[in-house]
Length: 151
Image 1: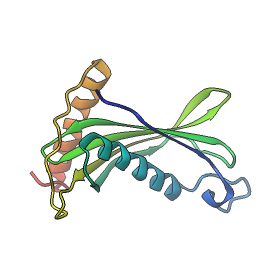
Image 2: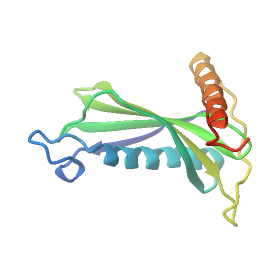
Image 3: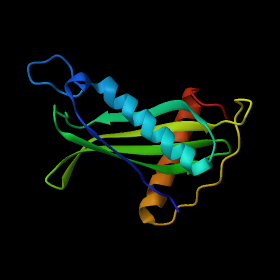
């Protein structure tokens, strides 16, 4: 089963840019995305992981000082030693969520010698996972064509 890894942050002043109306700094959000994505990947494969690439990261709306940020990460695809993870970041107010960011990252599992290590194969269990899996395969093909990923 593809479990969802969830994280929650309150956006504090140190997380924001210096504008008159403090907005979450994109680099801070990227760091949180990488952490929760790595947690999801480690939980899935049971091994240490390293970030291979951030395939897509789309900022859909700003997040502001004192907003609650909720993140959800899930596996979308696996290769022999790599895993793609989708991370959705939302602002939450009064129980309602609005999508701020969606990111796709690729992690590689590591053995005790810091070498790539096999991961369990991911099998989609429902229509949403099948759609995500197919899109992940397309992203992998594009990365290979661009030369950013080994064949």
